[in-house]
Length: 229
Image (tube, one colour):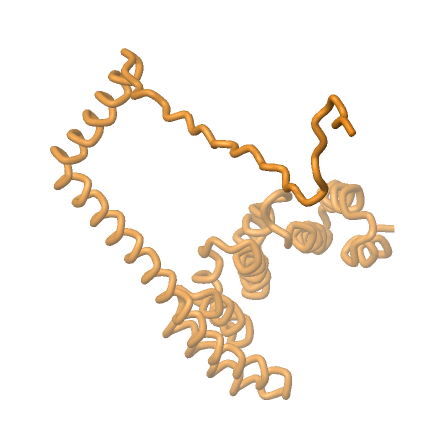
């Protein structure tokens, strides 16, 4: 029997797998004018830093000293306020308990020892108000504080009015600013009261008109409204 005219493959024969070799492209060295310029610039920068290394170290040292000094100052101020607040709180507790004399003692202590701290400034104002000490009120008046300074200015004017220093009191009330002093409405109130006490009704009405126009719903406007009418 003749074999068929084609080649037959047996089932037991394994197909040979073709070997695939991986080809890796190795880039050629970069040798262009742009690359040479880049390398040259890098070497110039390195040489510059090496030549001025001592200056950079000195500048860094100054920055570290300044930064350390600033952090030290912040820590000092924070520690100062903590000490002041501890004394101030004792005064507030005594005041809440109705013991004004003891409160005065603590407020004076914190004002004398830690006036530069916020609690020291507040203590100076409260001691001046409770003890009627105008010197402490004036100290609080001169501080840069949106809360304490306007209150001290108003209290200074009230104090002078009680002492019969009317012209000084009027100047103090009039010095209160609408934009800077939250006690400005109270200043207008006392000015109106002063003008009414002197029989100067026109000035009293002018001051009241400003108060009622800008602070229609305030306590001072409500009280003066009955008097003016």
